Length: 589
Image 1: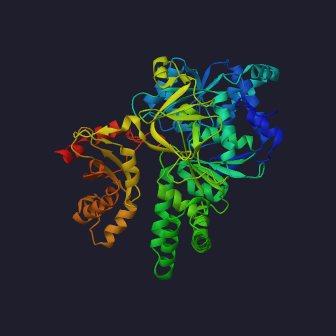
Image 2: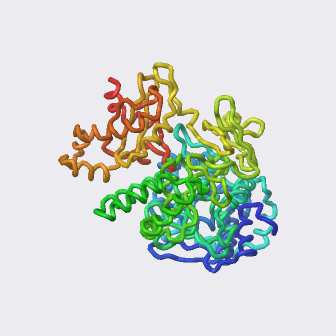
Image 3: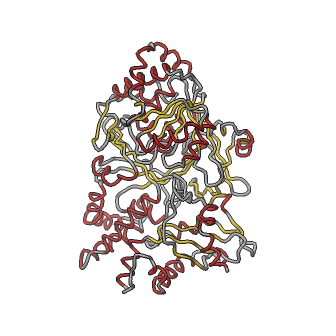
């Protein structure tokens, strides 16, 4: 085998080049369980035969839903695709209504879920899903069919039938339909071929740090229903990297067990890591506090390729040894070689801080429609990392900037189109170029994202404001956890702010503010003045028409359950404005 072409080829490639005794380690209940490359392939083939026994045919759709990442999901993913069927991953946090829409729109015949909670969710809507025959579970759930029952069913099907169907699958065949979480409207089904995703996995490998193939390990906890983490699974498999699978709710414990060489995260995670590090460091007294403050400020000055000179690098070496080695040990990152950040913009100061601390955070950019990576920073070669950018475009992919500033992308990673929506496909795909909807620029070969095209708004004075740029800058404050900048058609921009309650509460108590459980203290004049000062620091970077002139502190975070953020933590602006209409009206009235 020269290189994997279809997505299910990747595991056979691993078996040929880097067969692992521990290919995947994931949790069954609270116990960590490992399987080998051969175990994976054996169960994959049994599951494929079981699906055929159920009557699943090439082109049929099968849905997959799991809370935490687990090996059963990966096995079913491969089992479905190697018989020419199409899998439909669904976010576990999606509402029953969204799940019903997706299952009906995709005409899914079967659905495999991880646990009882998801089983009950899907069973409750099954009567309204005409094509859905049955729901299987990975956990043993009373009254539910277990996925292992496929193995017994598969005994009636010859292995040769799986091999025959596998050989008929072509690179350009549809592999998966991924429904975008959508910041507006109903989810769209992105059709991705084997070539789309496999080309991305292969072309992203050169941006990895130099890891010893067959002997390195990673941690995967971002939802594998998202193409970002899923594509990386294929890349890890092809490179013989032992995968520890965890979940968003157990990151700290999972890092301590896995001690990974590499993992992927989102900016919100790095913001929380940073806030925790800063608060703990500044809670010290005397020489320890001074030492941390010195090391912290030094890390924030970090530049790639030794640009700060030998004296800076000497001091940074001392800071890493005396301070940041302890930080890395506490986070479970003593062996870390690289951390990839995606899904949203990463603050430049965070990129500098973590790289300065010896935790290489590499920001990249892409969309579900591009399988997903378009560009990414790397430390593997000199002059390939620049904080504040999303890196250089990967091999075989082209990018150009349209006249209105929109980023256009072309390459083997660009989707087939939106499932059953030719009109929407035609809106974004023209002559092979995909219109990303993002505004950006290329300077010295590095791509920078400035905003979402659809999220730009115009004040009543006729001035355009790019809210994401302002929001990202505002979140540099350790007292701001979430923020949305508003002002479409208004005289000035304003903001709804979710405070970082732990840091803000600690500040308030130091200042003698009476902190109460009803959160009335958020309206204390001293708290408001302090947040005004934080906003003022950032406002000075922007033009007068872009500056946040007023704000409201909110008593709770934006949540998925309130339909205010997507499963990938992007703001759903229209819904937030609807949910907090009274607060917005109070600002402008």
